[in-house]
Each structure stands twice: as structure tokens, then as C-alpha cells.
Image (cartoon, rainbow, N blue to C red; front, side, top):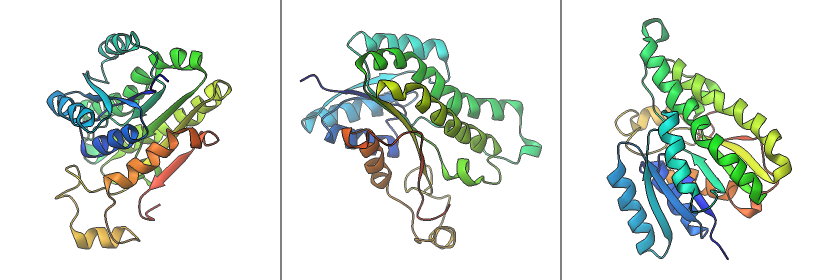
Length: 241
């Protein structure tokens, strides 16, 4: 039986790597995406193959519509991509009163524009197979807001409305669309940002989450077993919101 092909944008980061490993564990052919960290994506793809899985790497800027479409067209030559995890993200924080137009635009372009640039070209090939899974990675900031992250929260919360609407559009083709919204997750993006006492005060469970705790939920939503879950925003945040 032909393996399901799964694309994970931002697959070279801490959370992205955990998601790629979880999807490989489902037996999917994993396409590890990166932009600036292409070597890390290649290394992870090799590691997945060494572990008995099937994987390859790709590199493009999700905020560049033409580059994304060209790369995806190349990938689609080998067959449809039936699982998509929109994990690529970027933040450039600061109070809105002092925020530049460039700060606003780049964050929106990557986090929300990237969702469109990558998802849209994959929809018709996915629909022709009449099965698919789309999961976008948001943030607790997109659910509850966060000072200094108006741009980031706006872009991430935009994914929520997009997913709910797209779920209605694609449901008749047996394609589910969901959002996972992590809280404080251990890794390079949060290490040094929050000390243990701050995390304990912010998170009812009193600790940061592990990337694998998010990845396990993403893998479930991308599996056959999650066929009746669609249009949902699910938090993985230790009780923060």
C-alpha cells in the first residue's frame, strides 16, 4: 500500500522535529521542511530513514508565495500530500505603540500568509484522494492574548477562523482541519525566556510542556482515528487557558 505523504513546515525546530518523528511512527512518508535551517532538515530526514522510516527534506520560505508554490509543485509530482502540519512560525515582539510596519507584516506573512501559501496548492490534489488531514500550530497567545505580541497573537488567532472555515469547505471530501495551540513548551524558543518560578506561577501544572506532548496530539489528529474531529482549536498548555 502506498505510504501517506506528510509535509511538516518548520520541521527542523524542536517542536517540528518531534512532530516529524511522531508522524514517521504512523508509517507516513515525512517531508521535513525548513527555510534557513535546511541542513537540520536534511539531518532529520536521514535520521528518520536510519530508524526505518521514509523521509525527505525540502526548503523554501513559506511567506514567499511563488517560492512555496514552485516547491510544492515539485513535491506533488511524486503524488498528493495528504497530511499537512503548518508548524512554521516566527515572532518579533514589542508593544504595539512602538511596533513598526515591518514587524507587523513579517510576523503576519509567515504565520498566517504561510498557512495560505502552503495549504492552498495542496487542497485539490488532497480532495481528489478524498482523505486528508490538516493541522496548524497556533499558540496560547492566539487564544488568550499576550502583551508585546499583538502581531503574533493576531496572526495565530487568524489560523483559528481559517481552520474552522476550511473544515466546513473540505468536510465533504473527508478532510479534517484543526488547530493545536501550545503553551510554554521546552526548547530553544523558550529556554532562557521563562525561569522555573515564572513557569510555576503561569502554568497550573507548574511546568513547561515537552515537544512530544504536543506532537502526540498532532499525530493523533493526523491519524485515521481522528476522522470525526474537525474545525477545532485544542490547547496543550498545562491549564493556562
